[in-house]
Amino acid sequence: MYYVTALEQKLESEENKSGKAYLLSKKAGFYWLQGIYDASLKAYFEALKIFEEKNENLEVVKTLNNIGETYKKQKDYSQSAKFIKLALTKLDELEAFSPELILVNLGQLFMLQENYDSANYYLNQILNKDSVSTQSKGFANLYKGIINRKTGQNDSAQSFLEQSLKYWNEINYDRGIVESKIETAQIFINQNKFPFANQYLREAETLALKINSLDLLLNIYQSKIDLFKIRGSKDSLVYYFDKYLKIKDSIFNSESRAEINKLSIQYDLAQKEKESFKIALEKSKLANEVEKRTQFLILISTILIFSIVLIIYLRHKGNQLKSAHIKLKQQKEEIEEKQKKISSKSLELARLNKELHNLNNNLEQRVMERTQKLNERNRQIAEFTYYNSHKLRAPVANVLGLINVMEITKDGKIDPVVLNHLKTSAMELDKVIFNLKNLLDIDEEIERL
Image 1 (cartoon, helix red, strand yellow):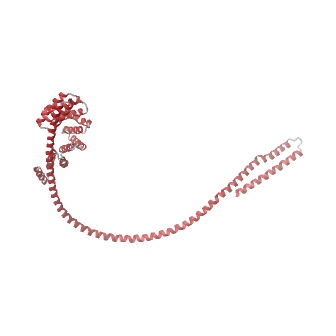
Image 2: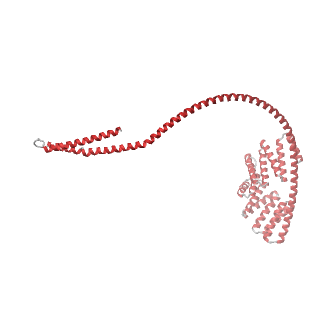
Image 3: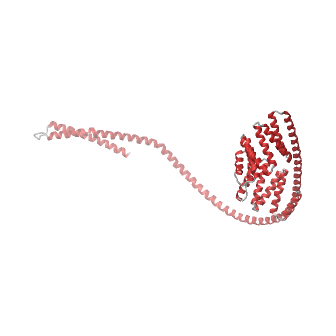
């Protein structure tokens, strides 16, 4: 890290951004191997920013994928999926490079989340491609086997694991062989095929001891414990349980040493950051001094300019206030005059309102009187109609009848009896006409009222 830091300072002095980005990627990988994931992410994000500025798209894809894998180590699966998917999208735009590594990472990520549908979606894309590396095919079959085993599809799981073993043997990838054999043994344990399970675990143990993989040995002994628990072999159970504990203690010691190493590196980082902070602080102090003096001069100049502007503004404002005062005085006089007019109109309205009130009080009585007169007129009209239809028609009919009798007499002499009847009918007619005249006079009087 001493040489890395020295090189980083040299690149910064030369303003070599591309070189700095590659160096940051290497530094992030170093922190990743030490388990210092926060420092690794910080370096990866700094490198990503430079790669994006320089349009180095392939390095952008690699860095995005590495960021996703770092979040996966921290078990922040949502962030991991976000960055690995973004890497896949960017890689699709390039078209010249195979996305198989990113597809494998996504398949493993969703398998760890137990989102098996999404995991199978990405793993199937690898298996359906023609030009895929043997290693990618091995991982795809291994993860498919694990998923099928966990979902109870033992036959399908065993088929995928056998395929993965085939690919691992082709490239002599011992760790992959051990993982596939452990998973196959788990299937045999579930099927109560204990001899086959024991055989696969023995083969896996031999190879794991050869490559000194403590984490795989721990998984093997855990599977052995599960196996002999079911079989009821107490001696074997105790034997492998002791081995399990020894490996776990060894891993714990290794993890403790790694943690101490991690803390040591973090301490060195903190010290370097502290030194950088001191240098930055001193530079900041000098910059602050210069800035303070500059600000003081600017402040004095600003105060002078502000004072001049303020004086001009106050004078202008004073003139405006005088003008406004005169206008307000005029408006006040106009308002007082309007108030007088409004007061006069209010008195007139009060008088009119009083008269209207009096008229409303007399209105009901006048309506009653008018209604009574109308009723009287209606009665007289009815009486007139009666006279017209009965009283007047009877005498007229009598007169007409008598005249008719007189016309049909033989000798042309007027009969005294007929004449007497004619006289009587004429008098009745005269009386009826007199009564009608009285009715019409009364009606005219009512209309005048």
